[in-house]
Length: 333
Image 1 (cartoon, helix red, strand yellow):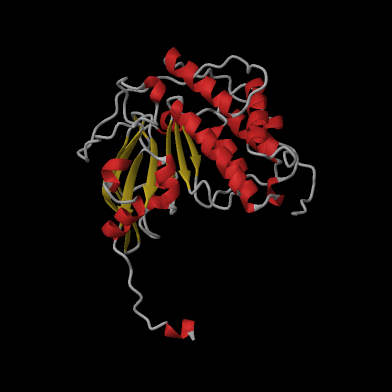
Image 2 (cartoon, helix red, strand yellow):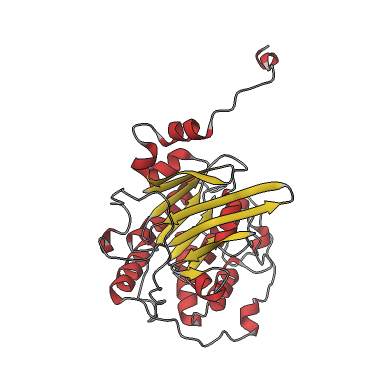
């Protein structure tokens, strides 16, 4: 059992007053469904203070990628059939690191209300692509649109509607878990009453109640991942971009996270996650993209991409199995 050091920490949020800007409005039908389902997922007790949801975005640009033909029955069932912009559109993304071309004119469309899986071998460009999409890394060329907002032309509008769990997440780890989630909510412009209610519910749902007052620097890898996810969820984003969200998370917590993410999608939100675990992507996602050598080699509904095979078989077929060139017969001696 992990021993955690306790210490005193002063949350920066206590020393400053958050901005008083009101959260803009979105459609009442979408807001009601989203809030209701997310509260169910967090097992809320009592009603949260009244909140004003974010605005409905302007129509997003379209790109010439594969037409989506899947039914997406598991995604956004409560609002199926409604015309909405794409949640994420990536057009001609290019990123070089020296002589290494990490992302090579990548195009991708993520339908709104979908549970979207991004898979690929190590070094395929998944993390770089997500970093560009979330505004953490500037591309050499191309455009990223989040619910119609250009990530680089209008960063505040794009980032206001997304929640991010990046790779190698760096946190203010001299805050306690509760302080960290509270701080993120206040930075997002939420009222203190709303933030405190949501922080309590998220900490409870993710099994962090006993460690809520412990400094994040003393958290295990799995606990750090969970509190980072709570920070990504606290403002009820319409688009979640998660890089390996289940890495280092125990099976019980993973089941809880899956339930929360499924409810976000069922309420009209969109989840994009990267993973190397094909079985996980097949179980959770209704849309998928396979990335290889910085390009999308297949994308569409899960059934369209995998066809009559499993996703893993289709993945190996597209990417190519790597043969063992060296003689390793000594391993069996």
